[in-house]
Image: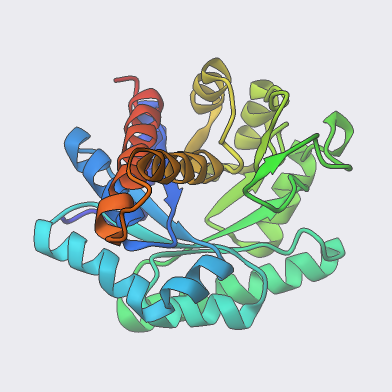
Length: 290
């Protein structure tokens, strides 16, 4: 594998497709995502939030993903998803993550900019001294926080609170981030009654204003046509987490329903793994027009 994640993102942008980003907190989930991506010969990003990273282990996550990449010469990358402090971003970078997300949307704008720039500067420093190419992403605009099933759209998420092209351009210029995750009608988690519709025209305006790749967070539960339109307008990476969590849970529940006396984890977890793999394969096919 000779291309960096930055180069794969640029390639996706040029071809009008998107790279799938899927979170893990267990080894079987990693295998499920890798199996689906390798079946389709597509690059893929593995994400770990702070909580997921604490559960798996920072260095252990790096070792697992690196082993798959090096052994099979495969474009699988590791991202520190939604990290909230410079210390946590630094820890992930130092351990060997290819990308990090500093999420400071709850801070006042000036503090968000200062913290994001500090993370960008550190990533540039490490990249220069080590030869690694570390991408830094930031979020601008509130889209909720939890990858779970929701009864309703969280307060504060509406058309008036979406990221504006003007704010996005100013933020990117002030911070130097490599990628931006805007609020364009998307939310973290899945609403039982159905997620809000996305706004592809806003994606297009932000992409044109910023000139950097855009990332769609909170992809779970989104309508296929909204995905396709937003990818066409400038989304280069799509995050999916809640959907694969639900598939994992449902697969394990089914395994116990069929064999309630099973005690071997590798047997009852297998159906959870298969559930994740099916979701990932379907999403990757959609994002890549396959």
